[in-house]
Image (cartoon, rainbow, N blue to C red):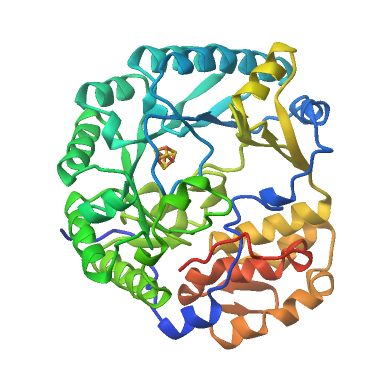
Length: 464
Ligand code: SF4
């Protein structure tokens, strides 16, 4: 299927295997800066409350982590609990309400919710009644803007037309379907069986229910995948025509993620084949009319993300790319991450500790980070790069009372290889990412990451 040409002008992206080999390195995905591995346990509930209480008119974004899944996918790196016992989610909801009540008791003024995202785990592990209950709670404690974006991650194995209609009725307008790969052999190798017809039903029913945007998550680098098999998967993806596509590179870290130990390493595609799969996917998605948004995200020309990219209003947060301007993010549930004012916070990861802290009347914060002005400045620059937006020295000098050229003299020197390769341009008053540099924004951002110079990059993934 070919997508209708857009009315906005879209930059062309050049694909170069040689550039990928040279500039694709291990590095953070920068959904935050500093990255979550920098969070420390000196940041506790009291510090979090101090930030919650700061007067602000910034809109809110809410992330709710729903950790339950009915079965394990072997590639999984999420914080989840595998269970068939649906009674466990009923208890979890009671504690989510306690957390909402506590967190909102500290917020000052009228803060409207611009964005909600239910992630997991499997949010659709919850029954219809439980999802109703959760939305009632959220609407009781938070004031949702009429045009709020309400998104939910959907496991196609857990939904039917009635459930999708019910979700649209609850106000959800965006959904993300975990597709990964359509090849039955790959699905068997990762223990996630979901035939094309099942996903087709889910996308058709989502559209019929009125969802404005449907995203597919795809993963390459999975066991039993090869160039031919993934090309067949892409045939189906392009035919089903989701509005957005996230094409993730599977990071095999069995020492860190237990389920991955069940993946047969000899069945993983070798590095060279992964690169070819990525290049083929990139070509095919662009040929089908998708626009490359950045990192591993693609969108249709008429999607909000593409429009935001064209109008330079794209943002990046823990959910990836977004059209919503700077919000304070309230994380709810185990291991959820928040961003309030100049701070990041993360909740406890186990249910037992999460319940115990809330029973004691405390917010379940495990760790976090208070940003210095240098951190805020570097975050501004790195996030601009991640969204391929120009860095305007005058604007930054004015905002942070610095002299950009002097302050970042070392970083500017380290940008030379990227300039030489034509990935960025450096003017008297700005740095811009070129269309071919879009794929390497993470590497350019890393030049400005103060903490990376002290860290090992072993825990990070490659783009390809
Ligand atoms: S990949 Fe998603 S559905 Fe599968 S086990 Fe992990 S969190 Fe659950």
